[in-house]
Each structure stands twice: as structure tokens, then as C-alpha cells.
Length: 480
Image (cartoon, rainbow, N blue to C red; front, side, top):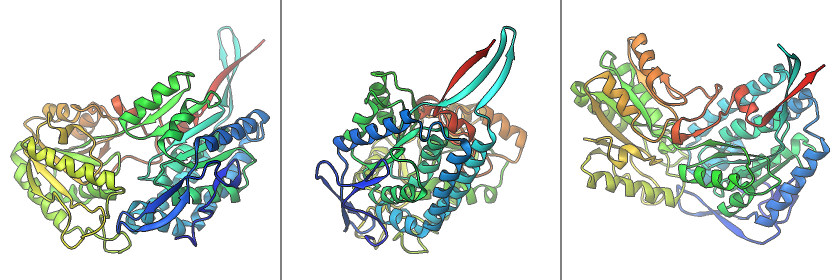
């Protein structure tokens, strides 16, 4: 691992690899083996201050913010080219630090490159100044970067967060401090090396794979102009409260408890090929994972039997093994949390029909079998709270209205899927589900389209033009 990850004894601030201000070390542990992989130096609050100071100077000097969109797009595009060349390194790093399978990482990498190039094209063809005529005169409506942006990400998809937060912020003209999860030490260093080689001006980008205390400090820093967070609802509330001190604008992409509604007119061979991966992909550690299965009461047994049979054919194992479909959970804390939720579901009266513990033959690592509960009601925690693991709750309905009510019965509203042969019915259901993204007869939301949540799944949008605009302010200049 050390041969592909640069500068384990340094951090990247403003375009330069430097020693940390305070010597704190972090042990990178493999979720698959529980063995020590690497020891790296950890950024401190003093390092965060240095990153903000450099970002502030770069923005105020205009070296990036006033550059042409063509120039910004060229540098960001070079970074994309470098990422594409280093996909093998990236996969090794992410598999090692998070337990994601190689197949899943390679799949995401290919999508990430496409999203990256698409948003660059979007930025290049979108005018910075739009002239409008109103009854009282002509106005130039100008999109200007906020300034110093802090992007805070979690460990379950660093490549996606790179293109949904960091790339739009850079294209918008912001100076960016990339605050990755502390668990993302290896991939964070690859992000930093890509930025270093791409040729950003001094101060424009820093990468801090730091603990929560650094995040808390950054979001309340008076020289930070914009914050974008992906995390839990609790983290979102904490960040929003901290941002209130300086009235710092914030974009929040928080948790999900996404429903999959199966109508009574569709055959299961049209459902299972996308439903099952949408449930267990990355061991269920995806905010849009379909973790609530809402089925017609009279088809319950048929559907559950098919789901259980499908999961029995799925291999749980080492993320390095090409045959593994599900790897371990990303951290010991997450592993313990998921097991606690499984016990809670049992105590609340749900029926465990498969899974529920460690797979046979895997004595080390944070592995949990894909787990299915039936007899679930909307009042149970297994149906209400984001577990972030391979745990599926099956709920039943008697009418489509009831199915929609069940889908909307949580605090979340991030994503969902409707399965129906009757596309008019499917669209009617999708229109009534209160989520930022809904898919019909397919897997997951489009990762190119605007993405974000309703309710306590957050607010603001990532991806496409809307994602760039999250990092820009609107100025009106009236012309006499």
C-alpha cells in the first residue's frame, strides 16, 4: 500500500506537501482483516487554519476566482485525466481502507470519470453573465463564486464526493478545502497528489483527512464562505448550527431510508436484477440503498422467497476476491452498530428470515450476512432509521395509497424506486413519493442529474448545473 500512496508522513495544504503542525498519528486498519495497513500523520486544527489562510489569500488575489472558465475547466480536466490513469491505485487504496469490493470500486470509477467530464462540459457551456430585460431596465445577472469552500465527506464513496462536491466548487471558482473522513487516509492522499499534478494555483486546494474536531473548527471559521456536507442527520444538524454563527451557507446531503415499492402487476424477474444490488451494494453502506421493501400483502410470501433465494447466491467475502459481491463494513463502529440494529429489530417483534450475523468461515473482519426482516411495521426502528448496512425491512400494503403513505412515513426523503408494468401508475406513485430522487424500474438515481434530499435528508443539490450553482452567489448589475 505505501508504494502507491504518497507522503504518509505529510499533508497537502494549498498545493504543497508539508509536515503536520502537531504530530498525531492515525492507524489505517483493514476492515477485511483487522490488520494494520499504514500509519499516517493526522491534520490538526492548526493545519486547518493554515489551509483556510491560504485559501482566503488565493481567493482574494483572484488567481482562480477571476480566471476564465476555459482555464478552470482545463485544469480540472487535467485532474480528471490523472484520476483515470490512476484508477488501479485508487481502487487498491479504497478497497484497503474501506472494504469495498474491487468490482464495486471499478464500477464507480468508470461512472466518476463520465460525471467529471460531463460537469466540465456543463460549466463551459453555461454563461457566467446572463443579460435580462425587465420593465425598469436591463440587468446583468452574474454568477460569482462564494469564496472559500469547505467540502466535508464520509468514507463510503470518496470518488463520488470528489465529483459531486469538489469538482463543482472548483469550477465555480471557489478555493476549496477538501475535508475527507478520517477513515479516508489513503484515498485522500491520492486526491491531493492528483491536485498537485494538475497545476492549481497556490492556495486553491487543500486536502485534510482529519477527525471531527477539525470539521467543527472549519465550519465555524469566519473566513469560510460556504460549507457542503455529506453525513448523518446528526452531523448535518451540528454543522448547520455551527454555520449559523457566521451565517455561512450550507448544503447538506444527509441520510436515507429509501423505499422500493413493488406494484402487484410486475413479474419478479423484472425486479430482482436491480432491487437486490440496490439493497446490498457496498454492504448496504450507501445513502440511497433500498432498505425498505414495500410489497402487496397478497404477494408477500412470493416476493420474500425470491429475495431470500437471490441473496443466498450472493458471495460475501474478501474485497480482493473477484467473486465477492459483498465485502465487510467499513469500520468496527459501523459493524457493531449494524449488529445492534439487528438485535433491536428482533426485540421489537420483526421476524428474521435470513442473515443476521457473521458469515460462516469469515472469522476476522467486519463481515455481516445480508439480512432480511419481515413482519415489520413503520413504527419500528428498523423501518425508520438509517442502519447503513445490509439489512432489509419488508413491509406490506393493501392499496397503492397505503404504499405511498408507508414510503413517506420516515424523516428521510433522499431516494426511492417504483416497480410497475403500468408506467402511468409508476409515474403517479413516483410523483407522490417525497424524495429528491425516484427511479422507475431501474437501480438508483442518475448520478449525472441534480441530486439531494427532502425533509431530513438535507437540502441543496449536487451534480449538473445545480451542483455548480451551490457554490456561487447571484449578483444583479443594473445598466442605465
